[in-house]
Length: 513
Ligand code: CA
Image 1 (cartoon, rainbow, N blue to C red):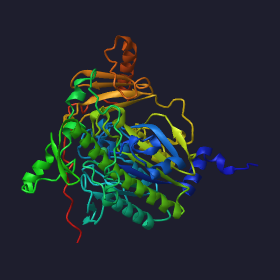
Image 2: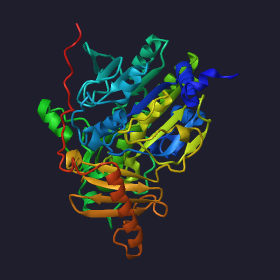
Image 3: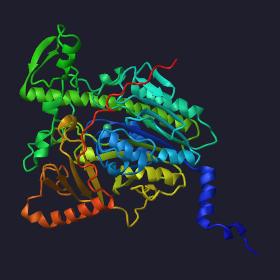
Image 4: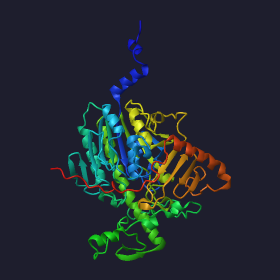
């Protein structure tokens, strides 16, 4: 007699998966900020701030140390996260409009019975598809009293954008259909330029001296023209608006706006009622401190709101089987190599923070150094739902890593490509690879190369490309670069992409009646 007659009809794996999937597919709460660098999260060893609630995710779950953006800029990273594909296959190499008719992970989860929701910064130029509920900022959105819009029109919310995104997220979670697992994308505007903190945190870093990164005054010796030509320098390129300076009273309207957009070479500030003119190194110090004080204050608001969400999940019986992820669409320069912004393939910009808590599936306090990419997010969400990765997705599920292992055939190198040249910051287009120990970057429009030994030179200050003793490793890296480029099907389809600003500024639809 057969003890388990059902097993003779269907393969064991399918039965096990089907039962598990039906009974207890985990919820996913995906919290993503815009431009948050891992080096400003204390669980990643921050020297500039303390983030207790982000750390709580890491302490109760896993910190992933090597998750990288495949194209370090907002809109392309978002398109990659949704599709599991590189920019050249999802059609979004620069700020161009995302074609929402293509397959996305949201659509697949929705079809598989998940309740899907998207709240906050979308920034893809077209309206969301595959979500049961969506309510988003038009384009970049604003920090104070932001407009949001959904399928029925727009609404102005009173308050600070980071709080409001969390309020809406909690409200939607409260009202969700309880018979379905949920997939919730809660996307913050913060800490995107121009770094406007809320009142609660504005003074938190005021008057405090933020430690400088060791490469703040990098002189770029030995590097290519690309790093010298960039216009994302803390000392040279921050505007008066970035520095929160106030226009003289005689300037109004367009004249005041023009004044704010200029990059000052001297600044007058008032200290204890006395006016002081800053130039030279004093001005440089002022610029770095002001930039960081505002940036970090924006992060504190995000951290508070992550705490609110974790508390809400824990209080509502959703702790055990909800996967909570905290990440950012890419990294950011916090003065490293003298820069702000992202775009370059250097570590601070390439690296995405990635913290994940899932009590039912991840050991608390764990860490992974496996090389992950943003193409992996969609396959991971599908795997959580018991769904296979479609053949045309280019990532693989993180689940084996979360279970504490690292498959023997896990990737040893990742491929990167940035197109938005010259863009707002005159950043040169480039592609390259990052392995576990090295990085090779090719600025193809300049035909110039950089190569770094990340073990001996983690700050990426010594370009080995022309070093006679490094020619063997350079040749090996080049071979691997071209192999990976081919493997990910990059045949230079978008090599001539022109920067676009169409989704940067987006008028919201008419107000709701
Ligand atoms: Ca971004």
